[in-house]
Image 1 (spheres, rainbow, N blue to C red):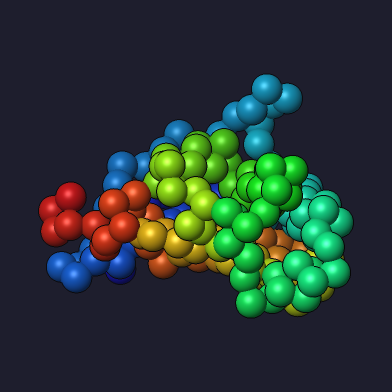
Image 2 (image 1 turned 30 degrees about the vertical axis):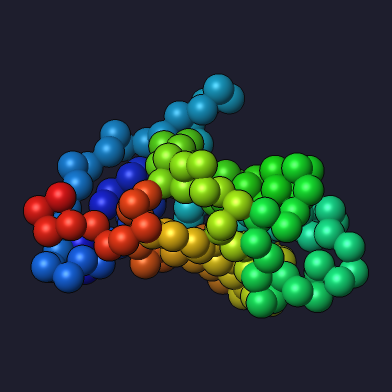
Length: 164
């Protein structure tokens, strides 16, 4: 397993058939229009991810809420629901990491699924999984912290190539 450091508090792990892949370290902290983005371990991040997940669930009807544990394809969601689903990722990732996820999904965004496990609460435990061709990303909220555990990050729909 290789590690791609996307922000000071976010490390993405990429598995390849040929061993570890390392990307250059990102800047020490991501910034956004309102100042530095909170790190995954900061008290603001679990609350922001939890609020975004609750907002997403609030856009769903009863049947969709029941299905959210097994996963909902983004193509089956309305524009408002899809934006709320992406809002969960945006709340849990640095701006740079979020953009990298959008770049990896490309025009196939509808082929991706979002799945919630547990009941969103800032203290946790609960998680959200976002997956589709070439990307599997888990955000877990537990003990008032957010951890990110991607299984793959490659927009081609296959595992990253050796040496690539």
